[in-house]
Image 1 (cartoon, rainbow, N blue to C red):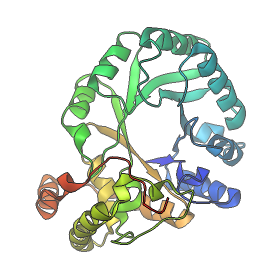
Image 2 (image 1 turned 45 degrees about the vertical axis):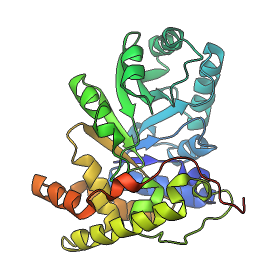
Image 3 (image 1 turned 120 degrees about the horizontal axis):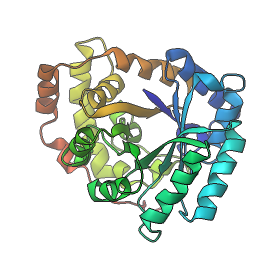
Image 4 (image 1 turned 90 degrees about the vertical axis):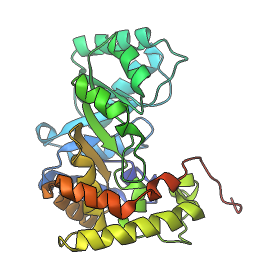
Length: 297
């Protein structure tokens, strides 16, 4: 399991620096030494650097360039990341989303140069489809792909996951808990404070909250039979796919880290997966993904 640092950067509500560092330390203690960040994740790299002081060797750090893929910007981002992380190399550096306005051959040429300089160890892509990934592979060794994948958003399993498995690309899925929707904590009528991205995500629109409540209620019954909770089930479900190498799970508190860590030991069988699909039925198809802004925003 990989710890995603978007929540501790304030993207899902305010988290103090002290709590954020405690979350990072808790992740290391549970064995989740894979830490994922990005240029767009605010000050999370600084928090990682602070938490890993004297412990850099204990972690595998992944980060991304998010906004501008020009050579100058990529190099600026890498240097800023190295400074914030207090390290001289980044284990995995990814392109956050496809950006066709920058020719992929030039982008990969820059990343390959940074590999040769020892500042990066591996190159990956995030939120890329099959066509974009195949094009990137023409110019560099792509070690990983980071798609959204969870019980409510399964688009990746049709084309991308099989493609990555066939081509030896490690898959690091993000949002296994659908940004908290699969925890069972947010029923119909749930609302979020200003500054929490979920206040504007279509995923948390009223109709999706109703659908998710039905799904998590059924999953709760299944998980309870094993002495587990819905979050553990959702995380374990992503890891049950043979194409998935790791799953990125965010946390805002040490208790969440400890609870989520239990999912790694839960190996779902083929019969378990069939039962889960039967319990959900076609409900996941009802989840709409477009961005949504409440009327009072």
